[in-house]
Length: 532
Image 1 (cartoon, rainbow, N blue to C red):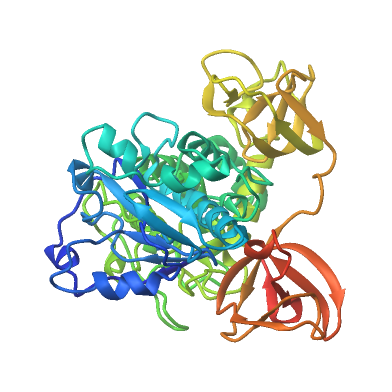
Image 2 (cartoon, one colour):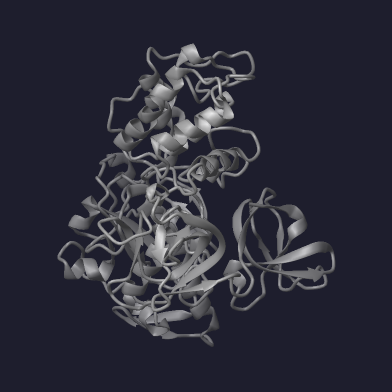
């Protein structure tokens, strides 16, 4: 998925500037055989246009954001305009409408099928991203709905989308919601039906900035004492503030603490542009060498400012506390929902907190080390009766019951369910002493019962991965090599999913793009990409 911000600034909807508290997401289909988003964007970006959605999805993976996510859209003709983000999917050119939502195929069916599965997959990826941003449960009643479901609820006009197209390909809103949940839970392979859509797993495998901290205050203290034995007592005393300030804004306080460790050299302030006395633990306001940066009266205010600045990057939600971040207004809201995207070089939009290469990964490395002090990032670290032993591999959830499989904060039964998963493949980092619980990459625990899950030492087939393209004119070819014809298309700059590698003429390696997986006719030279 390549998210492109293209606000409809001429639209009466945009200019009205009305805000909503986001309660859910509504999926639409444009209702005409037009695969290009540009055709709709030009019509909607007018003062007298009566329609305006938040985003539109193309089959190649381009997703155009047309409104701020918390702007009231004109997408469903009902009350859901005031509660739900509206997302349109383009439709294939190889269909023709015969009346209402009825349509017929005009080609051999391949283009239509490819288009539908592609937009479905990228919609899964986008909705997982938005559900994480707004902390929505896609499986909860009324959270993720189609336009037609909105009509049945009396909150949208009478439309048949999206089911009128999906049902011919075995797709459903029930499956859509499950696929979003699987993507959010970090499925390594994704569960997108059809296999030709966007890589929900690709984005959902990243670490969200918004959410509940996984590490405890004690783990954070132990980490910094180990790294800096002479750490000031004032630093140890303020550690809980990261958790309380983070919780207030919905930001992971342990992420903020790990960032501070990176920026201050584990609070040694060696080589740092700031000092302990400034109460600025993230280099805020340091725009170039020689600039001292911001100062705050107390450590709590400094941490609050840092948390607010992280929230600015991570989502578009309003602040809970009064804004004390003087640079909050300069951030493109929601441009970096993941820790990995805090680095400008790694951010798909070229935005971020810092310009240094691998900035987000450095924070994650510290975060993992913090969690490793007690063997786990979850509450299971505090279960001495059932310690966790290191283990590498993957666990596949195959249980099909409506109640799903519980993911817990500790390796035991009890009132400790963090979430419920329904399918997907997850990374395993450990197993409990009693062999009944796998520890996941997230630090949470899932049952090892063979009636529900299956352990695998390796992922089945070839794993996909993300690459970044920095040039605008990287050719897409029909096969792996310069001896294959060009498709006439370019990737453009952005982030893309590679699902297979192959040798071929003209490059060290060629990569198959996810959106071309079904026909295997979209290859790019990997000499011109950066693997993420």
